[in-house]
Image 1 (cartoon, rainbow, N blue to C red):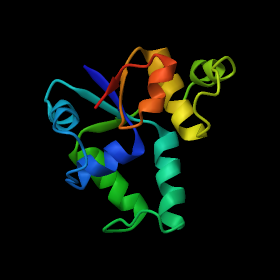
Image 2: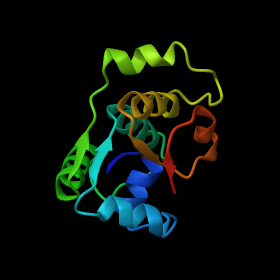
Image 3: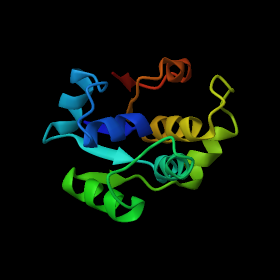
Image 4: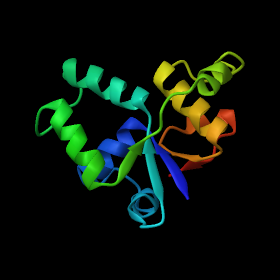
Length: 128
């Protein structure tokens, strides 16, 4: 299985936050799951750290590098075909970061781990 993590799912997983559903936690932790994160998600988290909305236990860059490696989470590069899909997507969701991870998930035919039920309007396979 391949899964693309929304920012909150990523943070809740790496920080052991109980708000992450058991189903999502087990799927992310499964040895046969290819866990991915979008550079857009890292960008969103960096902005939120700078604004004080997220607090990390260390400097952003080294902390993220360590967490991605230790949790075997790979970056899913943003490709032209991902962004091209945005041009035809309806505006069910206004958040540009969420729209991009939906476009990536649809283009790659993979599921998204997110609590955000608004993503369902795009027909993406959402795990929670």
